[in-house]
Length: 465
Image (cartoon, rainbow, N blue to C red; front, side, top):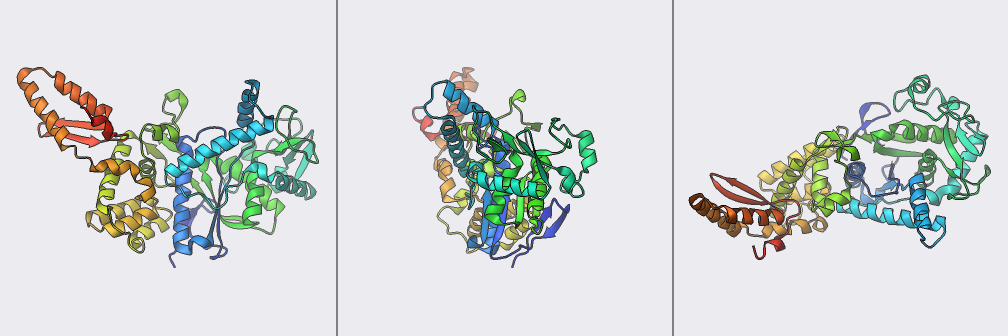
């Protein structure tokens, strides 16, 4: 059997992946808080762990892998949107409007991630479905001396786990207290103590509990849901490296204290963040956009996925328009090469080996380029599909590859030649504007004219030009 090596954040080393049970490989990934559209950075862990999910299924069998990714549908931003809708006259109770907003954003999320070729996880629990399990876990933590109630809140007592807390992120509690921006509240025994349960006002969604009407803190959600769906010990826990502290540290503390005989997660994987044109994505810089924005602009989901795969998951990824153009050109060539071809029975060993080396997707793509250069279409197709590329479901965008643009290129070339004589470039400008509006890239040089379909190319717009 193929040996998979993964970089374990917990040990800071690349290790052979040895599942607790090869018949029941289990992975939990922290999912989105569903208050709005997913931005491009939110999509990176989806693609990263989708590739890992595909690899695990390839090695161990599709029926032997369980992938859980949660939805956080308890959040102040969701509540604020529901309150605004209620004040605007929307029908329904606040709880119903919260559910309506969550349903809406979850639908958006699944559609957009599906457009990137991401398989849906085996389980997609919502936090609101597991309130009873969270309350039970909090009660157990109090009984074991790891949590305490104070003024309607319940807090985890970090001192009760002080010798272990911070091991994942490599920080000591004392250092964290000295440098952290933590909420200072009179009911906290220690500044690092974190909320397991908090009170709700009458105007906010809430649930009955031994500590009064309230709602769970963020961290307890994943501990309760992973335990219910995967048990006290499972194989892989993943997420963005921005979740390492405090979210994942707090998950470990809660889960290990609630279930001291379990391992919680054996292997921890964290992906790096995303940049846009070399800068951190932010609304103030004007480079903030959602996956939906790109799809609406005509950037195919398969192109977005390809760009993501070009960078190793543990390195910062830079999204650029140049990368998107190059990715589209490559995918068009590969789709033309594999048209009408059945994939090989299995992905090429070199592709599997690259992915098995800590998800070296860039190395796997390099192997696909080699297979394409060799004309091995069947192996190219099988390897690409292991990466979530070149599927039939994602290929509609590439149908434009069959459009013959030579007559349009000749027409523009003739217009340019005439303009050089007459010095009247109005027809050249008109044709260029029309081709650009249709989504074509116009390349003019001394060697001639080339028209290249770009992202969002619409052949219908060429009619009548």
